[in-house]
Length: 111
Image 1 (cartoon, helix red, strand yellow):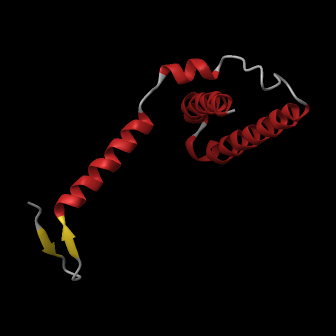
Image 2 (cartoon, helix red, strand yellow; image 1 turned 90 degrees about the vertical axis):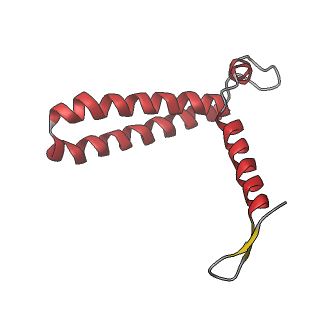
């Protein structure tokens, strides 16, 4: 038996279907965030269908390097006068470096 009620704006709300919808959304999010080790291991195996290195890889690497470097320099130069050297070089820079490293590994996984 599903309870039906009318909201403040006059919309009819079916609580059972709403709960089912929330459960479906929760399950899909859980599935997206679940770690699948076989997918990660398979992502680093060579695939004979794709060449290991092509001409555009250099362009992509240079663009990614310049983009990351410019972002890092902008963060350092804009926060250094406000927060000081200890926080910028001791906390923010290592965290940003790890985030960029993880992001680059994720790009490799997606490719």
